[in-house]
Length: 407
Image 1: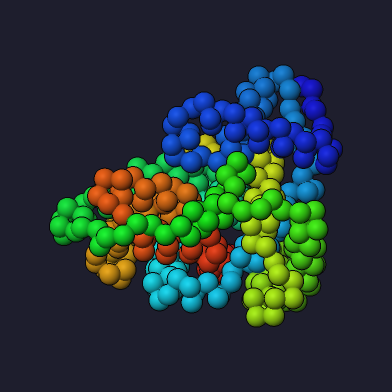
Image 2: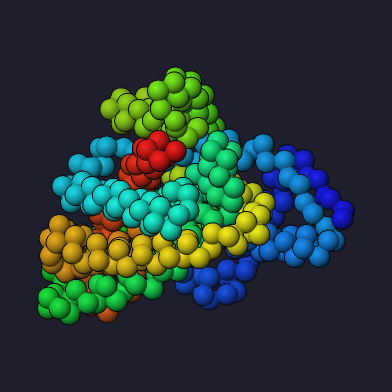
């Protein structure tokens, strides 16, 4: 069997091509667009499936130099840290803090449930984490990052492939149950909109958290100086984060990006107070999206799909339990703690998409609800803000704690 070996640049180039193949397919397949399946996932999965067929037929195999995969992953999570501006908590008010707490609590519940079911079925607890908040709250980006970590650092084979499958299952499930959950709450409690329309800030928040590069926030085009400044800040935070991660690694096992994310968060909040750097969040988001898109495409195209076979059934059991759990959590916890009113019902529907893979799915769920029942401005302010700036930060710390607990 012939083996095609791609060097570092060729691997990155193929990832970039597959990213845009994914965009092209998604625009033409309504189901993929409706459930916000990320373009790099589509293109990468397609290539992985073709590569599997060629390998099984004994025709062709591929070897990739994925040297750039780790730096791209760390760069993305560094931009997450640069988005963690605690000044935004004052803008959103107490409800942002409450919803962030609920979203973080759900991540804890998802991991606890996943580990418990994995151990009950006699499989590795890492499968429970992969089917927990790594992919449910975290989505494809966090799934790919921790999947690679589990393969490289903890020798858990197939983790990346399992994570991508679980994240895709979550995306679809979150899009399916959000509307029914909110409708149930609205009808059961006879809820009605409080009046008003969604604030214009909603558009900017949605754009900031959108993982697709074909959606741009309103504003001036970034300059070369602004891009270089933001890139320099990201690189410096990554460098300092590497030193911090190495030091922290003496006491606790951490993913490589945790140090960079913490350093980036410190830089962001210092800049909020001093305005020395005057960071442009839109540029940072765009650079983070580029890094994530290329990382995901590279991770997906090199998947070993045959590694899914042995753990497919246990993973499906855990994922089904996660869907049932989040439906109950949003009805009995999210709705109650967010105020038991119409906006709370809309947020509960959004939380289904949010907690099963992606904030764009949450926004899509909420849009479908308000189109039927009326505006929910508070919901459209609170949920996107938590999704864009806070949950990835706390979720990464929660996952790291669980990894150290079960390893």
